[in-house]
Image (cartoon, rainbow, N blue to C red; front, side, top):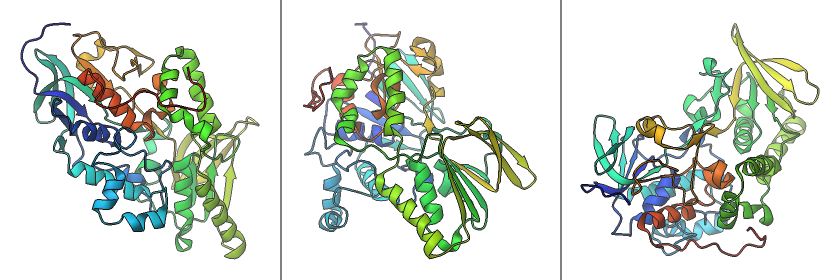
Length: 427
């Protein structure tokens, strides 16, 4: 252990305050021996505001909240939010174990308002090494130091390179839908991507019969519009046992498993939402006899885009036949997911990090492989899919992952994170 001079301002600084670092802030709050600060560029907590559609539902149980799976007695639990907001009984009667995304955002905002460690409107510009730890510099020149960092600055929308030059009112990523608010009434609309967000967008477009497009094309790159596999054996992929097992596998095998999991339904659509879209199309076709023309195309990939006067022409590659259809439309909505690039603020220390093919080398406790002073550590939330599995960017293990980080920083087990029993033997 290196001897270091001086006392840093904090034991831990979190960069970015989405659900993952909000969980970490909530679990750190009752522990007086850990001094924390969380910095975020946003003016307040928002959860995917550009895709907060009226009917969007959580795809996991609300027990996978900020704290419950590691500390069910915490005051930051979702159930306590329901009780303190005076809605517990009505919520349970109305929703059972389900919850809308909008109400879960209200829960996150309720928790954030009670955490004094959060600082909003603080965009981090650089992370460098100082005498007493990592120096974190925010926009405007404010600096703080800490011996531990937790990177939770989130993912960015993945828009195909060929579409980026045209992004605007007529070419939109789903993450910006309610910000851009494109008009589609009477227009030709193409929705690219058949995951949960793609289905939510299609369902939203079809929800108002007075605002329907003239045509709707919805493409899936896979063989169909596949359901999310929510069976109990598949859900063991989102257990702490599986995360540890996965982390111990060779890198090549981990990459193969991630592809298998995504293809097997990890990127699928909930049964409820699939049913809603199917029933709506039937109702429009046979009951309302709407003039809407719709095509749902499987095994199609958008491979090119150009502007031709007032219309957009999209090249759709048929994966099965090999041919390309040139589809003229008025609006394209890309539901093509997100990616987590290496943050720009790490440039001063990037040479000391293990990075291969744009991915961090991550240890079992979510700390980065770092060629620097041994008493300094950088942890990640949302940057470890290649080492810890597809649960890394999801809500499923948020509290468990945060608890592991807290325990690692403290050097003791403040929260129980020992693997619980699973039906499948992961070892």
